[in-house]
Image (cartoon, rainbow, N blue to C red):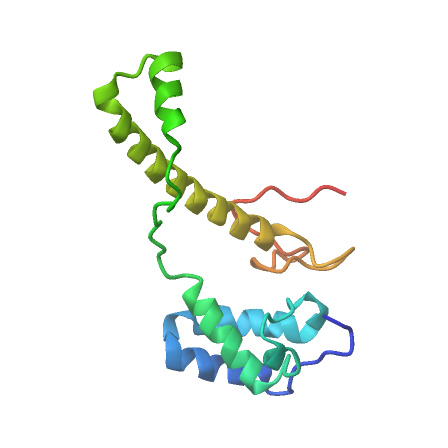
Length: 161
């Protein structure tokens, strides 16, 4: 976001109100996030919605962020990929790996489930990495508690440099 972006003066209170209406258990965390974004608006990611891009830092944007903050914590069930393996895969499995013909369909189906699970692992890693990246040189991290000297993100390695 550009440095001209700023949040409304009552952003923290709005954050609490909006999250109280969605999930009160997340209110203090979301309020903390909005406090951070109010101080470092350049750390705020650009909204995908063109309509919302003109409202960054305003009440409507804070409500949008509250919904996203809540939804990002909901469990996600993987869905199997819809790709259908080529029949040549069965031939390669049978000849190269000595997989018996009666097991081929089961193995291909289990592989699809494994690919879906890998997608979830990748999503979790992306979330962790996004949360541990600095917002710029000498700037606090986007997520994590204040340790007194820096922003920490549990579960991720500190950045070097």
